[in-house]
Image 1 (tube, rainbow, N blue to C red):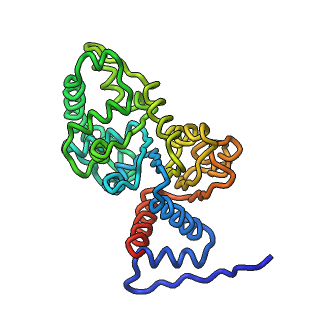
Image 2 (image 1 turned 90 degrees about the horizontal axis):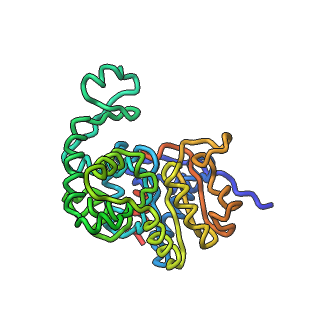
Amino acid sequence: MSRRYVKHMKIAKGMTIGDLVKQYQQAGVLGAGRLARAVEIVRNLFQSPEYLVFLALAGPMVPGGLREIIAELVQTQRIQVIVTSGANVVHDVLEAIGGHHVKGSLQADDRELAEQQLGRAGDVYVEMAGFEKFEDTIHSILRQIPEQQRSEGLSPSEIINQIGAQIEDVHSFVRQAHLLKVPIFCPGILDSMLGLHIALFSQTQSLKLNGLKDMKILYDRVYEAERIGAIILGGGLPKHFTLGANILRGGLDSAIQITMAREEDGSLSGAKLKEGISWGKVKATASFETVIGDATLLFPLLIGAVLEQLESD
């Protein structure tokens, strides 16, 4: 077996993100090497027109500061399908209507935060007052949908698209997805503040939620695609929904995952992408990489390096 020796990284004044990742690549080991391989995979996804690219979002990606990066990837047509938790949609819309996320602390006294009307997600706080305006906004948008359309049934992606049509913030990925006709699938929509208000609205107004409609929209996209790649941040339902949809075509052709979860407990969130081969969710011939770490730290670094490389081509 030929040996490839580790080349140690060098740091220099004035290095760009791309320069740093090149140093990761030449070392090629541990987390640095895995991130460098993930950059290479995502670069290929973005520059290959035959790819339909999924972005799966679990965990507090919007409160964690990734909102505008996601919106720009949609706006520049790097991403064609989003699968997310309801919470990321909620937090995106909150920002779009004037709400705020606040820098906080893991050591905060949660009783004091409750008194100050602040909800905590790790070391990020959310101003609870924003949810009052969120409620009014969602109910107003739902009322504007024709009653016949509501009665016949709307899928989660159709409701999110209606929201995107009504908000105006260009930094909102929900808004950009509406403009670029990128479906946002939210299989766990009821497990969110958005789902709560959809349910409350349905108590007094005609509204049916039809998740099966989204399956047809999703499957049509999957069947029509020549090749499919995925960028998965976190795990949970968005990851599984993305992988599961691609069983229909023998699995993903290419994918990267950034997760903090571990695989020893058998959880989907911690499962490395190679495990998906055994289920037919990832092709045996696929290019894939699992990077262990905080997505709010690694995703901007990855995307910055990819875009720098593409601009220099």
